[in-house]
Each structure stands twice: as C-alpha cells, then as structure tokens.
Image (cartoon, one colour):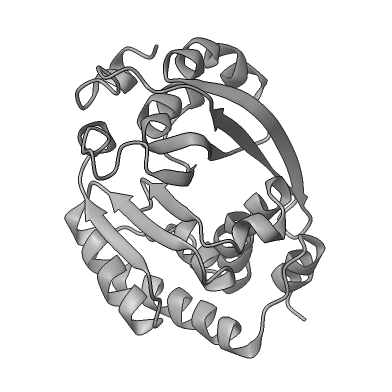
Length: 238
C-alpha cells in the first residue's frame, strides 16, 4: 500500500477503487495542465500524493466523519488546483463544494477536471474573496470554509469568515509554526465575528511534516464593511 494511503487510514479515511482511480486521474490532469499554467511545483508521484492529497484530508482530524458526510455546504477559498476542495469532495461526495479562485485559467482547469472526475454538486467561481464575500448569495451561506496556503491567519480571517454561516466554521491549513499567527490574528478573528475553537496538529510521517488545522467558529455576524476592498486585508491586516 502506498504511504499516503496508509496514513489516510490513520486519519480515519478508507478509499475504494473508484476513489483511487479519481485521485489518479486528478493527479495526471494537474500535471498535464501544469505545462501551461502554474498549478504545482511538485511532480514526484509520492511527494505529490502526500503533500497534496494526504495534506488536504488532514481536516478530517478536526471534524467527525458524520459531520463531513452530512451534506455540508463547503467553500474552498483560493483553491488553485482544487486543493483541498477536490480531494475532500472525492472522499466525502455528499459535500456541496464551491471552489473559488481569482485566476481564470485555474478555474478553467477546475471546470474541466471536475467534469472528468464526474463530481456532482460542485460550483466554480472566478473572483476575489474580498468582492464575492459581499454577494448576498454567498455571504453567510457556508457551513464550512476551508483554505490552504493562501495567506497568514490575520489576513485569512478577513477573507473567509464573512462567508461562514452563524454556527459554521473556518478551517485553515497551516504549518508547524502557528503560535505567532494565532497571537497576531486575535483582533481580526474577533472583528470578523469569529472565535478560535481548536488547533489540531497532524504529523505526516511520509514527508516528516506537520500540518496544523486551525478551526474558527462563526459566533456573530460579520460587520457589513468587511472584508475590505481587494488588497487591503493583506496591506493592512486587522
């Protein structure tokens, strides 16, 4: 058994033959499109599967399986090549998944690959989170908002929490060193109507890496003026 599959079992995830085929199709499509647009710097098969697929699935450690199988409305902000949203959709097909990225070429790829994978209930949006979070069809509508490798936590809080419904969650994929980001994000999380719920530390043996899943709860409505216009969250973090 491949290393990443063994570790997936340790995360509480078992994949059937159809899902394994979907993951392989997905990997090959990313590498194919990677010749024309920048989707990944990792091409080695083992590293690819560990750093992209397994890492995407580590969010399972932060939420019970019943929760992830309950038909949640999920938004992946800054999804890029569809990570972590597409792997999660493959493993938990009941998810109503929305993939958001600002780059049209990447969302073109996502439209092609999700069709090829036969994934239902997937919506793909092209645009900036700062703008789309003010769209009433999206604002406060998601049970779970996820984001990986997009920005530091103070910025990410502003880019994600407005999308979450009251009682919903944001799950941010971070690295080993998270303490500074947590301290610096207290104000942004509070202003955006959130609260820190938990931090799950996952050690990935295959790559000797540590992933931290930071879970924020949406406890209050986000003030109407947030998020600020594009670029401001990064330029002047709350």
